[in-house]
Image 1 (spheres, helix red, strand yellow):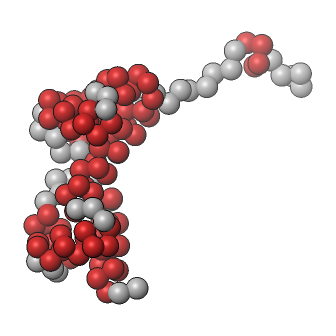
Image 2 (cartoon, rainbow, N blue to C red; image 1 turned 30 degrees about the vertical axis):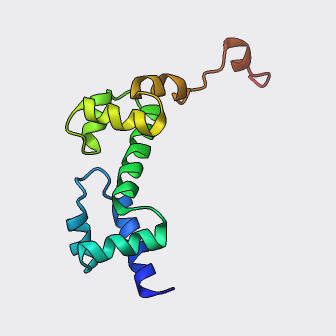
Length: 125
């Protein structure tokens, strides 16, 4: 593994653990020790996507997980991942998933399994 490849792996791990914070490419470049331009070129070379796109997609994927797994309101989820308005969050979410957040939640909500009365009667009681 080349040093630059290791740096990209560390940066990805750092980004993934800080999705709830505002992430700016300049800040990530300072963290990596590389210039903004060199880091972006290096990231694209190793990941095949831009650094900005990676961050945006990870935030949207995490927001989608929260929509599936929680009942938290859409606005709060958008704010957690750095979107200043529900309109911006909804526009980017819809562009990424081809569904607005509310519809996405309805179609993908993780169901909680509750056995019916017949299933809950154990023959061993």
